[in-house]
Image (cartoon, rainbow, N blue to C red):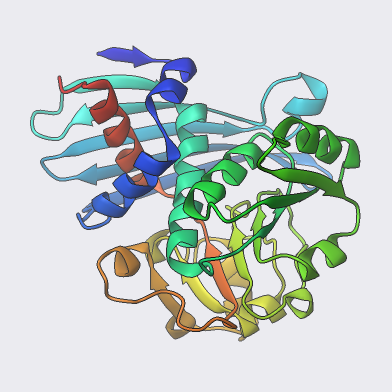
Amino acid sequence: MKFINAKQVNRALSYAELIAGLDRYHKQDTQAMEDLLIEQPLGNERVNHLLIRAAWQYDQAIGTKLVTIFPDNPKQRTLPAVQAVYIVFNGTDGSALAAIDGASLTYWKTAADSALGTHYLARKNVRNMLMVGAGAMAPHLVKAHRTARPSINRVCIWNRNVDKARELAARLTTVALSVEHTDDLEAAVRQSDLISCATMATEPLIQGRWLRPGTHLDLVGAFTPTMREADDKAMEIASVFVDARQTTIGVVGEILIPMRHGIISQSDIVADLYDLCRGKHAGRTARDEITLFKNGGGGHLDLMTARLLLEALDVHR
């Protein structure tokens, strides 16, 4: 069994190849997926999580990710909030192929998932991107979205802690990209063509009334039934897409709560990535259409990303 650390993951993967690879692998079925989420309440709405995600593409590969989400880590222990390990097995004989640094795999997978949504749903010439959240996921999302839409030349970063937003903006600024921070979320939303959110919010940050025609909204952070980043109005006025129906409908608060409120129903979920990648839906249909993509993650995406990583490293047995 090969052990693949974060440096090896980062050297082997590129967003252009990963986005194309996920597109290709969505043309294959994932026959089985199961999640287990265990919580440790800490008080004051703070919760530690253990998430176990498994997926099986018959005769191809089997994978399991073990993830801990400890939101107090960055402040109390100078450790990342999300830490993980991923194990991938041969789908033909069940032999263990690799143990992979799960945090780095998750960053690449999550960002490429959102960028694949942007490939199908954002306008071709978007220029202004808003990144809501300045955690470890944020720089990956910026890079991945810019790969899907190279026309992006300006990024604005908003974060509850404005110092973190300022630090990230300074780190991401290049000759080809203007990056700034803001403490005015409403103004930033109103000026943006593409908005990506990666927060731990349990109350909506993005208000639908702020969204201008033609905006693409990418929602990444909410992964439990009580978390959400956009309000009911946003869900009501947008064309709603998800990465996979199985991992979002009835699972994540972003979809579950507005359904409970009667704002949307299952029939309002226009398509998922399987539909988009297989040509069953064209994606964006009008320039002024507001599109919303819920990135729910899921074991199938981890498995696809792990398979693409092993391809890049030429690991077969």
